[in-house]
Image 1 (cartoon, rainbow, N blue to C red):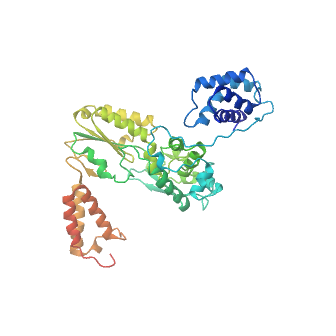
Image 2: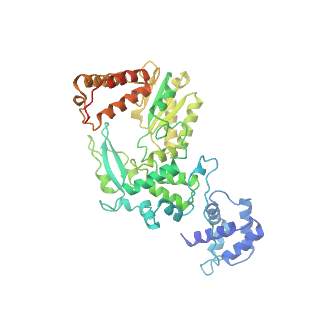
Image 3: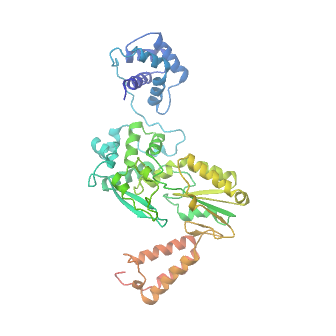
Length: 450
C-alpha cells in the first residue's frame, strides 16, 4: 500500500469514527493529519456534499477511494501539506462489518466473518494455514509436482476430440470447500431458472417447461467453469457482505491456477493442436472443475446472465432454463419466427457476461422433429429415448433368462444398484414405462455376490 493510499484510508477512518457532523469531522481530521487550515475545511465541505450521510456498504473503501482522487487532497499531498513527517499523528481503526448488497437473499443465514482471524477460527485453521490454502500468491502454479500441491489433475478426452481438465482438491482443501458449500453457498439460492446442482431440481425439472412447444432452442456455453475468473468470485463474496480481506481469502480457497507442466500435458487432437481451447484461462485464477464448491459458485456468479436471458425469453413469451452450461429456450410461433435473431441476442448477452456460446452445439428443434434436451425427448411429455428404453428392457430380459452376470459387460461393482438406478431414472420421466421395467427387475434371480 502506498503512503498516499495509507493516509487516505486513515483519514477516511477518522471521519467515520464519530458523528457525521462538520465540526466533529474536522476535529477528527486534525487529529489524523496534525494540521488545521482552510484547505482542510474545504476538504470536509466537499465530503459532506458528496456524502450527505456516511457511505453505506463498504464505507471505508468507498470513502478512502473518494479521498484519494479528491483534487484538494491530491494537491495538498503534492505540496507535502499532509505529510511533514511522513507519518499520521494518530491512527484510526474501523472495525470491519458485514455489508451485503441490498436485497441479497438469505445473507442472514450465513456466518458473519468480519476478519481473517475470524475466518481462520471458523475453519479451525491457523492464520498461516489459512494463507497457505487460500494461496493468494499463486504458489500452486510454481511449486514442483508432489505433496505441496493442493490439487490433483487429470485430462479427460471429449468425443469432439478436445479435452477437459479435472482439478480435484486434496482432502484438507476439499473439506474446507465442502464447509463453504454447506454453510455459505448453500443457503443462497441462485436464479429460479437454474436446475443444476440444486436440491429438488433435476434434468426432469430442467426439461419440463419445454414440453409440447412449437420450437425448442438449445445453446451450450464453452468452458463454463474456467470462464468464471477469480474477480467475479471475489465480487460475489463482497456482494453478500464479507469485508475485502475475508472475501479475498474465500476467493483464494475456491479458485485455482493450473501449473505449466499440467497445461503442457494437454492431449493433442487429430489436427495436431492442443485439445483444449481454454489453456489461457487456466493460467489465471478460475473456478476449478472438480472442486465441491465450484458448481454452486458457478450458479451464483452467473445470476446476472440468467436474469438477462430470462428477460429476453419473457419478451417473446418464451421459457428459459439452465442446467450447468446448457441453455434451453422454448416458445410458440413468435419465437419460431425470429429464432435466428434470437440466437444472435443470446450470443451477444453471453459475450457481454464474459461467456462464449459454442455455436457447433446450438440446436433448433421444431415440433415436426424430435425435440431433445439432456437426452430427454420433449415433444409431448418428458420421455426416455425409445432405443435407450429398448436396450435397458433387453438387458433385464437377458438377466432373467441367462443370469445378471452375463449382462454386466462393463464389470460394474454393484450391478444390481446400477440397474435399479437406471430404472428409477426412467420411472422419474415416464412412470408407466418405469413400472414395466421394475416388474422385470423383480423377476431377476440374484446371487449373493451380485
